Amino acid sequence: MKKTALALLVIVLSCLGVGWTQQAESFNECSKQFPREMIRVSSGVLETQVVNKVLPEASDLKSAPDSDVQIVVRSYQMGKLCVKAVKGDPALFERSETAARKWKIRPYMLDGAPIIMESRFVFRYRKGKLSVRFED
Image (cartoon, rainbow, N blue to C red):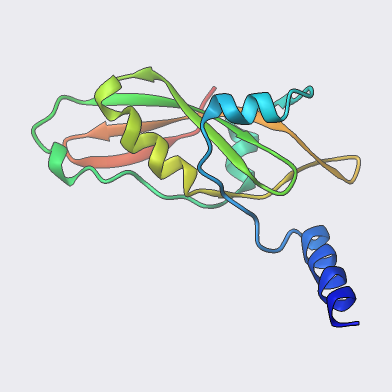
């Protein structure tokens, strides 16, 4: 009886979108695991889905030149994320991807069902300060 109740609780919480999972898989692993069609959404739509943002550590970059790093993010059914840095300074890719994997994003819903979505955003590194730009 306890196992049935626990299983039911897990299902209910999953349906409510509680406890979105953020797994640090590689972008290619995610793509292979979920080869279905996805919807590309504007970065403005992505911005409305973000529940929590984490910025990369940039205090050691005060004397570094200004740089932008473009991130592609895919969000699956219950907010599972896959991220990949695709443009910018390669020296900043790893720290940018690590921070982006810690984001929490609400599942994108279409006709009442969560779907796979892909979007982009930019981390802007400026003299040790960091910001996020949601522009297409």
